[in-house]
Image 1 (cartoon, rainbow over the protein chains, first blue to last red):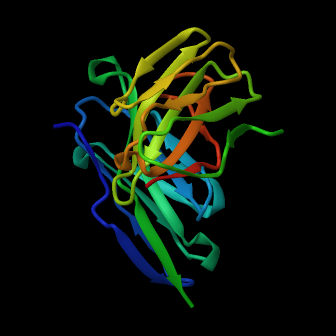
Image 2: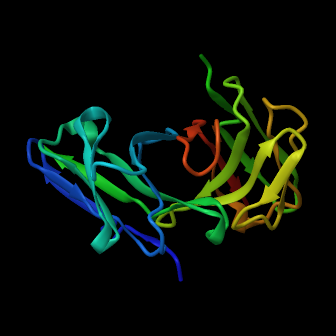
Length: 115
Length: 113
C-alpha cells in the first residue's frame, strides 16, 4: 500500500550536533515533497518543499533536504541543531490524481535537543 | 495578517453532543482542509474543499460534516460526538492543490468524555 514512512518516532541530539530525519515514500511517480515543523501547541509550518530540479533544497531555519529517487527518500538535515529546533517534524507527500490528488503525512518525528 | 483562524482552542464534549469547529482564512485561498491529529498517527484528512460550494471527503470523514458557503469560512460539524473523536483538529488552506504550501491554524483540542 502507498505510504509515507518516518521510521524514527523520537530522536534526541545534543545542541550543536548535526541532525538527519528520515522520510521514505512508496508512491510510484515522483511526488511533491514537503517537510513541516510543529512546535508545541501550534499548527504546522512549512520548512521546505521539492518539486523538481536540484535534488538538494534549502529551507528556513537552516534546514535542507535531499531527494533521492533511487531510494524514494527525502531526508531532512541540519548541520548544527539549536535548542529552539525541539519540535515535531512531519514529512508530507503530495500525490496526483492516480492516488486521489491528496497530501499524505508521515507519522512524525519528535526531536529533543539536550544541552 | 490573521491567516487561518480556528475557534475554539479547547472544548470538552459529552458523548452524543454536537458542536461546530469554526475556521476562517483571510488569504482568499480556494482550497481548505480539515485534518485530525492523533499521537503517533500524523495528520489524517477529514474533508476538503476546492472552492465555495464544493466539498469532498478525505480519509476519515465518518461522524463529520462540512459546508463551504463562502471562500473564507469552512466549518466542521461533529454530530453525536463519540470518544473516538477525541483529537486535535487543524484547519488549513492553500492557494492550489497538492503542490502548494498549506497554511495551518493553531488547532482545536477536543475531548469527548
